[in-house]
Image (cartoon, rainbow, N blue to C red):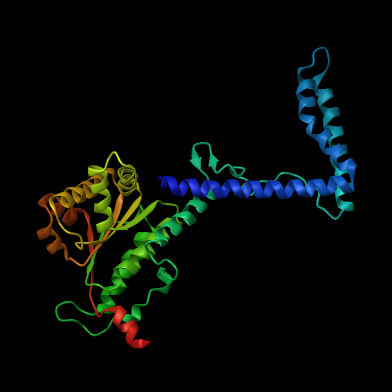
Length: 333
């Protein structure tokens, strides 16, 4: 699992800003307390020197270190008791002037050894959702707000009821997102006409997977292939270097959501880029959700056989059919 560098940088900056704010607040409180009761500052300095005294006592030759350590500890407890009394007289708890990290697991560093702490993961998820929101409307879009009543219960010839179908589609998408990485299906192909909820459910998946601590990248097929093209033909320019970073994100994120496949101008280059994208992610075991107005059969006719075989063999197809929800919403207004 690896977050995009920009997401991680902004999340780390947030964590550092929180530390700075907390420390500034603590320093102000200490300054006010010391001004009211100068003895507190003296006590804190003495307590800070306790550790060096303990080390010196343990290393001192010719004396019983255990006895010296006991005496230092007892003196330390006396200082703490006096400090607690002074703070209590000021209406403050005894730990009011102590430096207490918000996260006890990593002490606000964001890392537990080489492992990212959950506090930094939460910030990364928040930043990632902001990033996704630039292309996806994540304001009200969640599995809880999905409206199944927009789908008719009247059977379509040869297809069945749109509502019953969407209930199944919804359950697969929900379980895919909530059990990401552990669900039976690793890759999804959302197929259907415009206005049937493909982008909405893609947004729901993106939100849930991101909130669970995984790196998610969403983009349209047209934008993705444009970045691959810039990476190849503008490699020495700033745009080319930026495109290289973008394509690396597409290839390496935990979940890629590729929207509107088939809307792009299909050329030999886009075929090559799509093959690289699909194949590299499959080989690496990374998950992909593709949405398209094409059926899988139409996609197989449109793209190279190597691409078609991977889509047919490695992607679970979810069919969307029914009335255009955008028109239904407009008519209900």
